[in-house]
Image 1: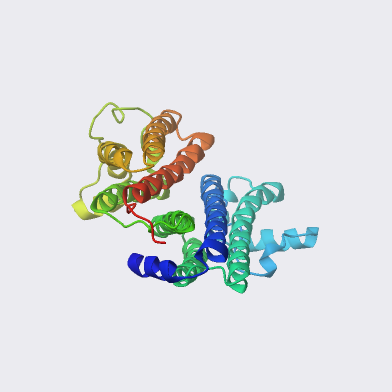
Image 2 (image 1 turned 90 degrees about the vertical axis):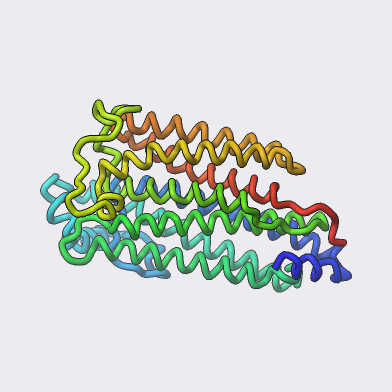
Length: 360
């Protein structure tokens, strides 16, 4: 793929003009879309922590962009929510009123609205560059793939919501929740990587390659992000508000091994919390070594600093979140900085995978 893009751009006689400008413009567009994905991740964290995700029980891609505008509209939406197990077993007994419902509805509506805006910005922006024939050859399929990934992310989000509306479930499936978050971060990473590749093309340089160090760093980070999503889904953060020990023990008491190690590793909140807090140090070691490699690459010093800053901040936020008993604002910051850590790692991976030599 990389060599095909390089050859195509090298052979394009208008590279110094329209195509180069198109590459720069597309790079800015994709970074703006990535910023919207980041905002969605932040709002998604608020939605999860405020139990807002099941407040909208229907998926209406077009008409759903308009919120309830009359008292009758609000009454209808509230009635739909009142039919869910979450309301009957949790929110209703807790005394939720229409005012409280409007609060949780707001966060879920904003989360979905951002998704709609993201899709429009991406599609409209890419269509504009396509109409001007300013997309470098070799990148069209990548832009199409990004658009498809964005659509699939919306489908995964609804698939997650449905899991909390079916049967007697009062919450969404932790595994669908993790899939939704990880899919969003994958899209976030792909947008950043493609934007940086386009920036390289704009300066007549070769797109970056994926290296073994990149795979190692992102794999370690992926496991930690997945564990974090499971901790959130199983409410495992609440089982201990002490650090470094968990309720006075290094290995927490209360782990249920009765259904086997595999079940405990994927379901037990004590064990999930334990793995998330200590796998973080494996990630730190991997990222320290990775950042040292990145620093040696051309233009990699800034990315190396960003990686160190992001994982240092993430560790501190994680500890403070636990000690606070999962304060909402700290938990949201923890999730937001996790996305920034992903961005810094992708930036570093791209710098490390940079190839010497111009393509024009």
